[in-house]
Image (cartoon, rainbow, N blue to C red; front, side, top):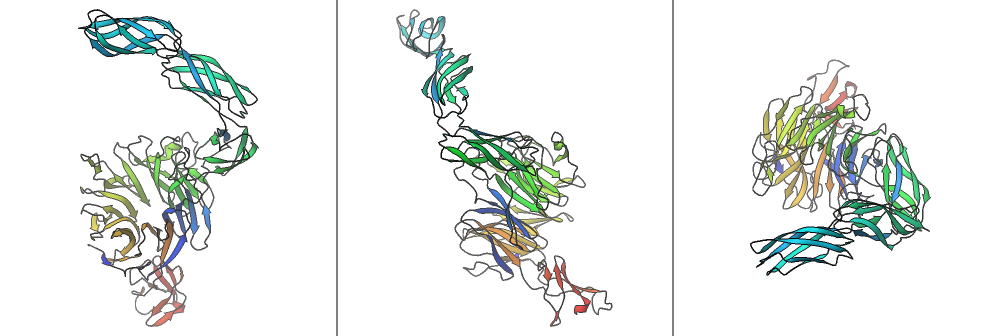
Length: 637
């Protein structure tokens, strides 16, 4: 079959198809993105609580995950305080005040001379002279010449007391033009305080960095909250220049973390400290887990409050389980909406320097799959976690993480439905002359049988796979633009679903209903079609962009830019069911029988509850609609 025939809506229409009733799910002045839906619940990534200053500990792309029940209208923020804490982590406040500053002093001998220009015409070794160097004296050296050129300098005495590299000059020897630079090998002998800072509530830590050496250490001397001096406890070695000096600053603020169900929910300030001129960094340590970050508020020079900061992105959900990626520790978090239990899917150690360590979670039943970069930051694998497995200690929790599979080529963007996992796979990809990779394929694995196979082998690019029941769908570029393709697992047959000259991508599927993003005249809109009837229609058709559709329970949700920022909209299939087949057929002979009907238009039966059914022109009472069709009691006939 090819392809879904396209019905084009009238220009200027917002909701193009009367079969669907549209509802704004969430509209604010902040962006809401990446919607997913399961039953009556929708989840999305939300930026309403985001601080766009983006400090070092906060990713500009992460936000919160919110969930809203479309029936009750109840909306809730998924707790951003990490997961798996077995005790309250210790809270530290660092910086945020007037720190002391200083410059290091080093002293040592000249250790070598690097010839930067050999000159010419030297008939004998020129005299080497050292001058300057911050008060050092006594360095001497002998030049070596070859073919009238200075080729090196041998240090005969390094001298002493050099705090910086002295100037090197060459004289005599009958030639000209030789030049060189000296290197000293010093130790830190002291620190000159340029500012003592204000309000140090504790002795600050002194840190030395750069300068070419290592090992220097010192202790600050504090009087009245001001650093008055530094005692060098270890001069280190091999410093070729004075290292930089930094002082920590602590204004006396203290606090205790509050933990509930393994989640850090807040910080109680036990002392606000004093003399803070800006917000200090909030550091959490211990507690048996990770994944929480926070920002401090300062009022009157004291820390007045601590706010847990957003770190969530890439949500997915199925039933009562919501999963997302935690930017703070690079791990996947999953929350049970019924029990409130929130946990990490893996015991793999957190890695704040590898922000993409675990990404793109997908949920089906009790199983979560994700892209995992624990083996390499360049190549991802597909991992899974079955939450139905018995709980284990953190040191052995990784034994329940199952790789699908581990190879060196990148695998990413998995999806799961039941026991079938699909993903993008680069094992057959190639790199062009500009360094771009091409030909990702779609692969799948049956978790029950363990059989892995390629879904696509075409040389075109295939991205964003979705599995629904016994079929796999994806975006495909083999024809020079993006189309939607389908693979039937049972028959092994492949079908091209769209053949428009425009791009179709980001497909999602439920039963017979397929939805995707389509770009016409540079504008992204949401389209849908039915596999059984081959019909395809525009769901949205206004001048603003709509993208990333998701579908479940006959509702399609998407990101919508009609209000000038990204909001979440939903549309429900409200077409009245029409009986096209009866079971049992003909005359109903028994009062225990029921009348069953399917939708004539191939719809999904999304009208939960009472269904409006007409049989031979007369209404039928007491009918109910399900995803399978319509059921009517015989007493209603």
